Image (cartoon, rainbow, N blue to C red; front, side):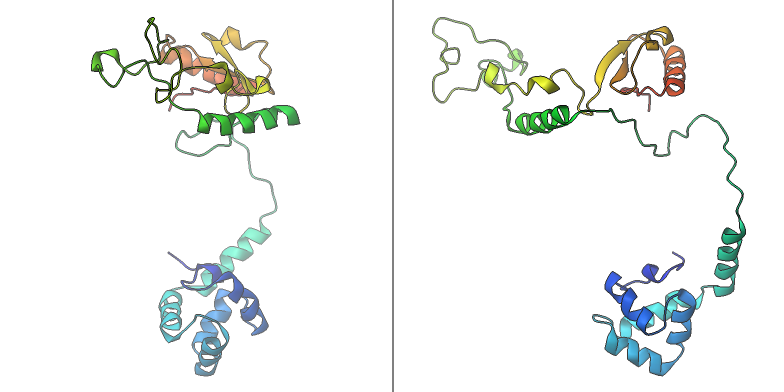
Length: 231
């Protein structure tokens, strides 16, 4: 890795920057000149906490192949560049990171989402009666039945059953974890009337790839977030 700033030096801490500035070392070029002076090297070892001869030796190796003149020319070129960058509208790179749209929420909804997250973390996993005894039953929840069912009667040492007390706040109910209200769409026409500030869309599972691309492009034009965008 090329060294462009003092922070790129291995073993150099944030607290050392201010100490180096007092010594007159503010750039990579200043550090390279200081390392060539034995007196400066001794001063660095004495002044900087946690820096010894081995660390200074590593700095010399890192700065040995650094072209100071080339870095200075690059900085000057950036400073002289004053015209704004040309904006080219093209399809986003799927490998690049883009910040996802966020909903506009009031304080009550934000608090409700936070409380719902805490409740969801404490909520047990609900499994059907005797799921552990017969593998053919599976783990999917089913209401316990039977006149002698101890789980139905909520007796001690029985698995928890679904109850209204496990619900989250009403203000955050049916909302996506991001805070958006979900809307199911199957074509680009369904995007009309969607409020991008409060609502997000989820493309139906029966929609093909060609139509999904059309829906996603139209959603980008309208500023609508797609929750199940193609990877």
